[in-house]
Image 1 (cartoon, one colour):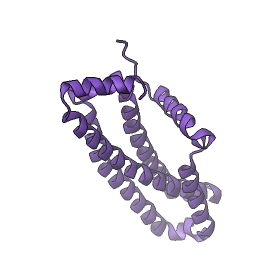
Image 2 (tube, rainbow, N blue to C red):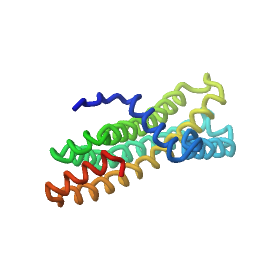
Image 3 (cartoon, one colour):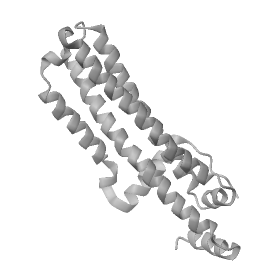
Amino acid sequence: MTVERYTFIGSFLADVQQDYASRGARALVPMLFLLSAATGAVVVYFIPRSFYLALNQDITATVYAGILAFNAITLALSWSALAKILETITQKDFCSFLQRNGLLNSYRFYVEFIHAIQIAAAFITFTALIVLMIGNVIPDFVHQILLGATIAWTLYAMRWSHGAVHIANDLIIQYGKFDGMTDDDKKALKLAVSNGE
């Protein structure tokens, strides 16, 4: 048996290809990210210019610090679900089953993807806070872009935080079914999955 080497990019492309096969061209457009970006743009449109001025820097810094804390808490809470995913997929027989049927890399990809999205949300918020501290040297449009990006990535990270919990719950249910099977049932299941049934 040849073990497929895991790479993030390879798993990402395999996931996109699988989504494209099941949903068509809609799978190529990240609708939830676009919705998050649109929400960020709408918020930026309605935020007055005075929000970015040195006069209100303490208020703006407090807003960014609150968003950064929220992103950090979301990241920490998501890791309990991500840890449960990793714990479940590394159970000896279940891990072998997932590997043989080409599913192990998908779970590994989602753990890494969700973590990357949440780190990006925290990093963008931290960057916005640092740029704010630099002062009025930075043009308004940079502050607007960073505020919009902060909101967009925070919303998208929240979506994937929920996704981590959903994946963990689904995996636990599947593992419970797998663990309760006899060896003959497991062999039959392996055969059915490998035949695409």
